[in-house]
Amino acid sequence: MVIEATNIHTAQPQPRCEYGKTPFSEGECQRMGEVLQSDGSLLCVGHAKLMRLEAQEDTMLGTVFEMDKWLDEPNNQANNLCWRRKLRHRDETVERLRFNRTLIEAHEEASQQR
Image (cartoon, rainbow, N blue to C red; front, side, top):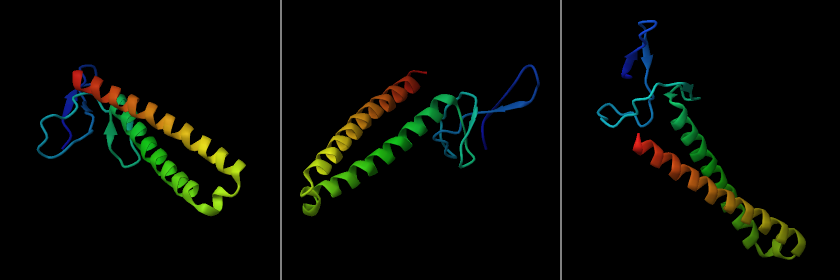
């Protein structure tokens, strides 16, 4: 059951953010849920951004993994120009991944301070 607050103007309950919600959780987010996720959960804006960043991180990790496999393949190393281009693309993806991790850590730190 989602903890709800009452809006003093409408007297209707306002749903809370469901981030990290478990039946016995005491550290739940107390902010209002404003963003409906594809899985049906309702999150505050900050946690919705955090979830989006984490999804991007998973995608980028998968991309780097696939690029590493391609770069390690001996047959692909024969085409030096293509190999260097792919390596540069991989390095750019790793850099974006590092920046994304910094954003995730900043969101988590800001969330803990609230």
